[in-house]
Length: 132
Length: 79
Image (tube, rainbow over all chains, first blue to last red; front, side, top):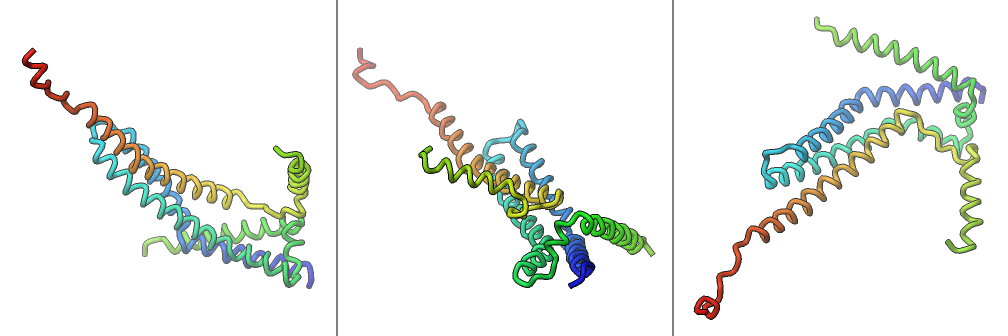
């Protein structure tokens, strides 16, 4: 296999990972996790609230935070799955992907192509978000 | 630490210094995300501990302290 094919495979995996991250709303999920943490801290530090109410609120917030953390972790695993799968497949079926992944020239090319893709996707996404 | 564990530990540390074998690179996004998930799980366990242990124990201690003293025995009251 040539030298460009593994780079294209990696780029395809990175594009799929980026699209998954966009579609699965990974950033808002981490933001809601951080908001839950802030709210829990505020509940614990609040004065003038009975311990009974704090007990109930912390129990509810603990459940929500655990669910949110596990969901965010699952989505993170899903997002990185294409690249990890490609690297795993390369272990059994040598495609040259690992060599490209650890080669600094291929990495530079991947970085520039990924940045171009992200910039183009961001512009396209913004245009789609404009009200008609 | 037992003597036979020292060479094993040294070998493990030396193996970790060879990046071609480790191949455990994770980018900043995935790394920060993993740290966030771990912090969220630890925080939820802490909150659950506070909710299930700290507040009930606090309530119990308060109720024990606020319980009125036992009334004096009749023999003591006669004296």
